[in-house]
Image (cartoon, rainbow, N blue to C red; front, side, top):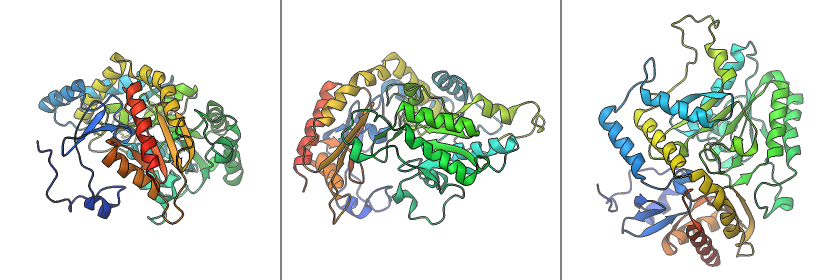
Length: 445
């Protein structure tokens, strides 16, 4: 396999990237192992963002690679429309065993974006099955990220993702406020306190539209892509109580937070709050093969599949799915990944390293241009004062300097630097990230 730089960079249109600038100054990641990427010259770069919040067990882990290789030689593909294969059932069972009580059904897709659309469609169809077809609204939250499909950006709350594509999905205009006030909560370590009242905005939307028009609320337990905004047990429990009161489904988008990022299989368990649907992706296969899905409460599944649904033995209950739903290679990677998480106690290491990461990142308070620092689990954010003439430039420069001069791979969002290393990171890895970031910040203008 070739690892050198391609001769021609023109054909590939990179997502979420300033393409003209990138192709003038490319950052090529040619291979990876453990905590490190290697560029096309062989230079080792510490991965401070687990790829895109997804390589939780470290790169190119042999058990996962071996599982993919073996499966590719035995079952390259099997449809899950009217047929199935053993690995899909095995992985679904393993995920259900990790999920909160009463959530025992798993619907596979290929990404977090598709999981968002799945949750929207299932929520609307569930109410229709129950004779409440007027429930079509799905309420997201400010700064929420639910992927990049039309449904995902509609319920999402990041302006840049929504502004460029015209009218969005009907019934998705309302968004709850983000439970964060920088004036009061800047430099908070872990979850902010006193945020329960932010959930009460849902009551106002019920008064405005009527509960009988609202199908679901979708939130992230931690708004990751927007810049690591933690929530709290009190906030999520209040949201759960309001949804239960009015018969609204509660969806947790755990594409980032599931599989150890917050020290548990699911963030729902960290906070002791059980939603009706949990979306997942990323860490389920350690990102080795694309896979996503939704964990569904039994009551929802039963509404579709009960014996008295009037469809007969041949009737399809849910008109939804994808060619690659439950792909054999993805399921093999998922099973091997879950074995690694268990056998190497990787979630437990994340809990152990959480305060270490918090110390390292909060030590950057007072560094040039830093206006806020946030953290929860194995995720942290350093927010920079924007250049008034070029918002986003400082974080972009930080990423470029980190790559070129500090051998560090970072994630940025606007003027936020996000840190989310693989969950196998040790104290020395985290210390190096903190020290490199301090030098990077000192070089910004």
